[in-house]
Length: 498
View (tube, one colour):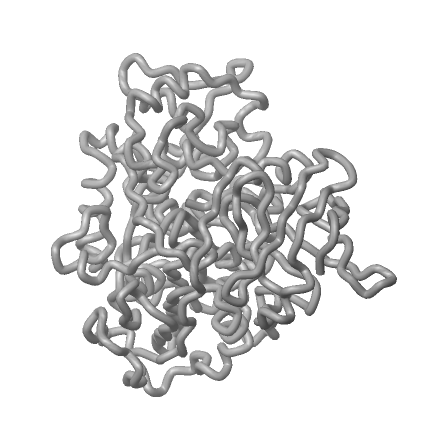
């Protein structure tokens, strides 16, 4: 599920003292192999040989042209496995990288990934295709609620369907009454009764339509009430919409064959994690699973390279519905998408063990799909950079550099350091197996070097924390500057060490 940008501060730094992260191995990044988007091969088998391009005459970027973007990700151990799909009027091309499954096997163009919030784009297209008129999106959500449900309002201003789709409803980012959920699968058991209670107990802090706040709760509500107004449930309705379009691998529940092609997920440190499931109530926010083959076909429909009778619906989803907003980059929220300042449309997805991106330029009929079986926080930046590459624009790495230091090079940073202000928490740094670990009052974070003496976290539990070690006059690393967002503090070495 996609998350809002979070800004750091003393409070968020202190918060990491209450969140655990298990140490784990890095796994193998692997090499890229071009595949024919129409020839999946056998999931779980070695995909080491290059496949035949879908269109040998296409003008799409080669693997070498992708390398300024993909090499730093692979060399830095950022992803366990990744699939990139490209499309333009000359054809399609799929590249696969790394490993799809914990027991080995390269991903293919028919490997199934969790799509997380890319679900929202598909949901919006489905709703737009069934509108009696575009103005129907201005209907109050309250008109579609089940009997007895109450919608939050502010000064008589009612939340509309369009505001749910553009994240301007004023509803919170997620369900506020989901305490006690399984942290490894937080949205699998959330019920309609809980959503009803959440809405009834929530008070808007701003009038609907006046500010942007990315809301998974609002997106889930949108899909649910629209399906109910059609006399069905969301999951059934969406699959019924997708199947005639040829998206047979874009599903919620997997068949036996699909389950064998379902990639294993990983956290940012490449530790295996369980698959997330979504209750029927929250499924519209992120429950779709799909393949690069299906999503490239969806793009072909959106950019007019294939005819699915969706041109009017696509136009509705592309209409900006709020002003310029800083969300990863500067974008205009639309109904289920984000419009970039250079006229492209995109949406990303991010959850416990997967990340995704879909984006396109309608004027040039070019598009990008990225599916990753890792919670890779820079998935949006990668997808946008690939769009720039398609359009002949210069690109550069979307991740910081990663240096792989030896145990001897890491040893000088080990020991205990205490913050000189604020919480005065003690951080302990230890080396194990060529990895530097940081710990404060319980949780353990794997650190990655971006220079010979500075490190950062990749945990999805908290925003990135940076550690810059500094040498004293004796040459010993006797203090470390700890930074997270706008917070910065200095910790000094305790006792002997280094």
